[in-house]
Length: 221
Image (cartoon, rainbow, N blue to C red):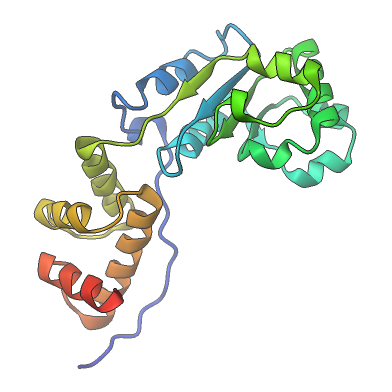
């Protein structure tokens, strides 16, 4: 069998409010972010398992709110330096920031002072965070917490179909259903599988059918 040489262009998901798939699992978070800047507090905490769409929603909000992601390297500088530019903030994987509690306390207070907004994203709810600084703990516990639930069948199907369209992958609804019935039901894993299947189909000059997917999964297990 001849293998076709292909250019490995990156597969990028479209990030736009118009492309976002609203559902009962994410509706509360979606609605709250859409209300910005008419929030009741300067910050909001969004929690949920990996792949439920926390970072996707935050990225959409970042476009609307001129928000930037705070990197851990930023902790080496005075928290007030973050506010020199007129922007809002996202702290993703918040558990990685919990060892910098004095910095976070200063950041929280300056954000309130300057009326800036921020989103905190994590897998766990705040009451499970190990925070020894009581003043910081009380402030974080005062923020609204929104839990994005794991996607059920209908939403997972829509997400998979959207990812396929974003990546330019031609695949039937029946084959998508087969993928969801046989692979791990996590969006990052399904996303990576679509990229692999697309690359293999181009190399082998074959369509991505249920039989094609079944053959790949059997060989990869």
